[in-house]
Each structure stands twice: as structure tokens, then as C-alpha cells.
Amino acid sequence: MNYKKLFFNSICIFLLCFIIHFTYSSIPSFFTSIFAPVNESIAEHVKMLFSAGIVFSIISYFFLKDNNLFLTSYIRSMLLIILLLIFYLPIYYLFGENMTLTLIILFITIFLTEVILSFIPLKKEYKTLNILGLFLIIINYILFTTFTYNPPKIDLFFDHENNKYGIDILNNRTS
Image 1: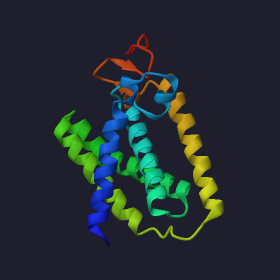
Image 2: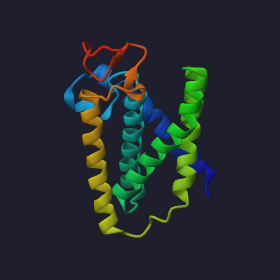
Image 3: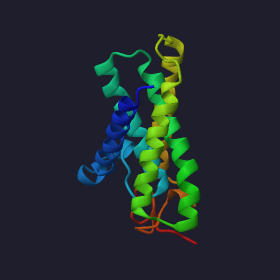
Image 4: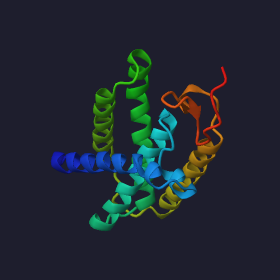
């Protein structure tokens, strides 16, 4: 296991999260709302992490010439989401929002994802699975977009900082 590569990949994904985090506030549009968080809810940040995994996989694909771009992208992005929710949610609900702790958990999540991904044999060309990966990525973005513009009224989608759900500023919380 090449820890330097895993650490480098983790730093790149971590930095992509920062870029994607501020994309919608810098360039507000329907297009950027598909990939970037539109508020400070946990669900919108899951979308950010998913997008960072996809972008990194695409960049990595062109530089490393690996096979299975979409399959690798989807597996990386879903591992990022699953691990983040496993580590972050219990701490968030016990102690509340702490930016330093959140960033540490984010980096650990990214690093663990890269470690797990290094054990998954994706070097062969799996055409059917690769196409399935693309299909699943598209479905995820359809769901992310749907939930951005019409979020369920549950805590995961609520922006506690701005007291709203989703993208609509008039969509205030009703208790």
C-alpha cells in the first residue's frame, strides 16, 4: 500500500471539497446547484463530497489512465458519503457543530475511503459495471437536484445556520 499516494489523493479530494463548497455562492445557477451545496445542511455537504469524489476520479483517470472511470468514481463517492455519515452524525448530534472537528473527520473519512478503495481490484476493464456506475452517478445527481429544490422536511436537509431547507429562501422551517 502506497501511503504517500493515499495521502496525496486525500489532500486533493479535501481541497476539491473546499472549491466545490464555495462554487454555488460564487456562481449561483441551476448548473452549480446540481454539484455544489446551496446551504449549510448536512445533505448539501454530502452532495459536495460526492462531487469531490467524482471530480477527483475524473482528474485521476486522465492522469493515471486507469480503467473503469465511472465505476471507480461511484464507489469512491459512495464510500465517502457512507463513512462520513457513520463518523460525523453521532458526533454532530452529541456535541453540535464544531468546524475543527468537522474538518478532521472529513479528512479522516477521505483517507479511509482511499485506503478501502486501494483494496478493491478495479484495474481490469469492467464495461458493464462501468456503464452501471455512470447510470448510478446520473441517478444520484437527479436525486441531489430534486432534494436541493424540494427537500424532505427532516433534520438532515435543514440548514440550521440560515433556518431553511433547500435552495428556496422562503422555504422556512415549520415546526
